Amino acid sequence: MIRLEAVNKIFNQGRPNEFCAVRDVTLDLYAEHATVLRGPSGSGKTTLLAMIGCLSRPTSGRIFLAEKNLSGLPERFMTEVRRKTFGFIFQRFNLIQGLNVLENVLLPAYPLAPDHAELQQRGMNLLEQFDMATKAHAKVEWLSGGEAQRAAICRALLNDPQILIADEPTANLDTHLAQEFMRNIGKLKAAGRTILLTSHDPMVAEADCVDRVITMRDGQIQEDRYVA
Amino acid sequence: MLLSPAILALIGVSITVTALLLLAAVFAVRVLRRWDIHSGSELQLQLERSTYLISTLVTFAIAAEVVALLLFVYNAEAMHTQFVGAMCATGALNANAWGWPALLLKIAVFFIGGIWLLVNRLDNQGYDYPLIRRKYALLLLLLPLVATSAVVQLIYFLELNPDVITSCCGSLFSADAQGVAAEMSSVAPRDAMFALYGSAVLVLGSGGFYLWRRRAAALFAASAAVAFPIALVAIISCIALYVYEHPHHHCPFCILKSGHSYIGYALYLPLFLATLFALGAGVVAPWRKIPSLAQAVSNDAPRYAALALVGFVLFYSIASLAILRSNLSMAGTWW
Image (cartoon, rainbow over all chains, first blue to last red; front, side):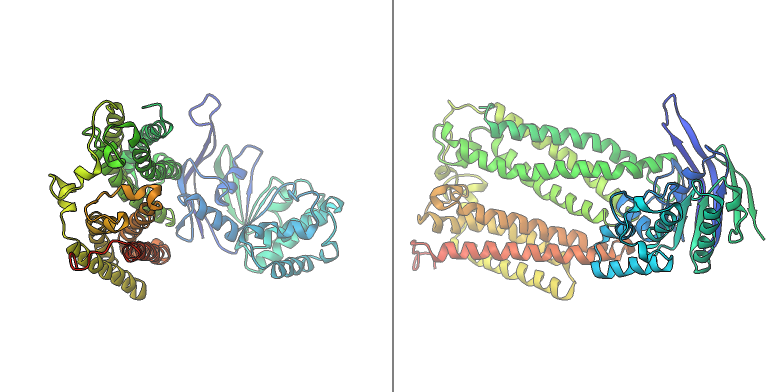
């Protein structure tokens, strides 16, 4: 489904502080699989995930999504792919303070300007699905860690993305909340979504729903292991 | 004379645009030599990242040059009072040998630059840069034209001398004089009108047919390319005479004056824009067969054709009204 061919990412190229974050990564990622990229800080997993999710471009190499050349797309097309194909869950969830839960969940759809009543209904359906309907009009700063996590998942799912990307999603969660997060990820995978996670939390890599664990170090793939 | 704000603006625009196109030309050569969409090389990705920036800069540059044609004509009209013998822009353009070439080059830049803008707009709608080589090749053709236009315009302004007595439009656009202007003036009004309305039928018919059946865009563009010079000849040979209500005054610039309600702008703007859009429809339409452009072409080409038709209808309507409402009656002489 996603194919990476000799992907490199170099920051500050040609300067004294040049840094090669991803080196010559070639990889196939399959649909409806949950894949975990793990490795120590600075191993290149977040950079790789950002390139797959169209948040940045490689310095060289190609990334294909179902034969479509993602890394070569002009920016306006890349934005469209990013918006329609990928849902993002960030390490600190990045919920916008001052807005309520429903407003946060609806944010990714605003650039598409859909019918507002239909959009609100879509947002409420998602919140109900994750037992957050009663918190729809609560400010996000009032949410507990678990609620914030579920609000972030709802926001990532609003545009019905095919692929869900989560960068260190359990880094700020206790064990109970991390397990709950992985259970939710398992449900989303069972519903047919492709999941890409980065984490150095062993609990994520060992979760039942995970199909594949790719270990990175110094920007390169060190180990690529399928979980039975 | 160089301290006139309009002249400074025109020189500033032409130098800036030429400099920008020179920079873009270096990029264009790299694209033509090294572009390979199937490659994931660092150079290819650099070219992909840069092309949108370069084409955006060039778009603004060419758009400025397109608008500069209007300013050039307005300025020629405005500065005629500074030349002995000049009564309108014709005199100002005739003040030295470079005035008419400068105007003709500006018109050429208007059309070729305008077509580049439409091609670039289309290319930006394709996800796989389908016209990138063609549009940068066209840019390389445009550069010498823009540079020549800038140099000729600069020489024209530098060599303007208010002490030199220039010719007025009455002597240049006269059936008895020599040259292209005289030949255009000497075309019989009856023949010019037949040609004008014949070309109107051709261009409106072919444009309407294209909008109806989405076919024969090239015929529409070719019709517009024929209708444009015929319209200019008709203005000089006949329409202007009805505007001035004078059977021997053929000047195509005096109609830009306030005394004639600036009707010249109402004639030239729709005519030039309509011709550009018709040519654009003809240039854009054949690329509907490229899969990544099919939707964009099916949106843009009919839109350009519709804009062109509106422009031509406006031009022919205003030209006809100018004749019908004129107090000049040449029945029995011309008709």
